[in-house]
Length: 66
Image (tube, rainbow, N blue to C red):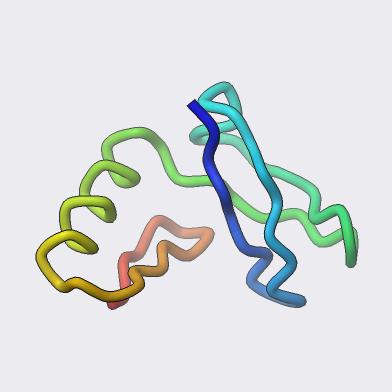
């Protein structure tokens, strides 16, 4: 499964695999390291997005907005 994540600094979108979940990732554009949420938080974000019908953002601390 492919996962897209946005850098919280420069908003560059990086494409990752499930092996990157619950780890830190370097942005390919600005080089900042940011946290990829674990599978449970990602699933909650997906469910929230379906209910909201809009974009949902999960920050590097796993907090969900949207």
